[in-house]
Image (cartoon, rainbow over all chains, first blue to last red; front, side, top):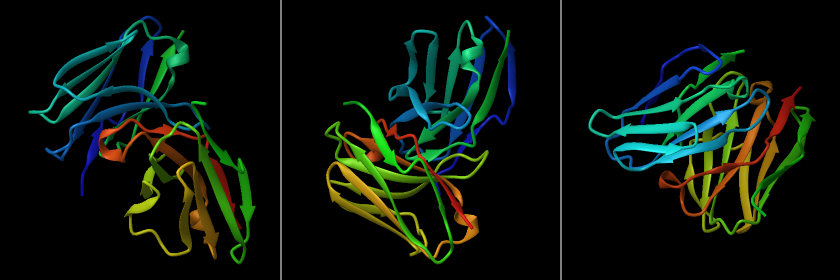
Length: 105
Length: 114
């Protein structure tokens, strides 16, 4: 069984700070990694995909992948209250438990 | 059209009822998925259809029966469900079959089984 694990949280950061979300996975074969954001009562929304080792930036979001360590992370810069949501890491159609992020004004 | 639609938004059914959930996408995607999500838990994969053929069944009980009539439509037929089947049922699609591709989710159907 392929496992995906996330730091359990909840995570609370002040507005304007950097939020750091982490995910580890057990399957060495996986090639694609995804971060989804899920607001309460809504469906998951894709925010980042990453396929190669290193960093990928998209606006305030940076995904980091280290395949040797089987580790993928998401950094949210200049966090806003609207970023308050559960962030789900997905590998091979399997989701981590999610990290609930609260950004306090 | 860049969205996945699901109907109904909410469904309440008794344990002896038969009902169906519907999902539609017009993005030309060739893979479609059903997930089940319980409160405060992540989505759990149920079924994957690739090019209209069932490619993955995650040992889902037979009271859930998927159907893919064409490349744009995905149904989930429900029969003799249990109260523990109450959950948010999510449909998703991706351009190609699944593990390496970005998935786009519909808004979900919130199912309550009485």
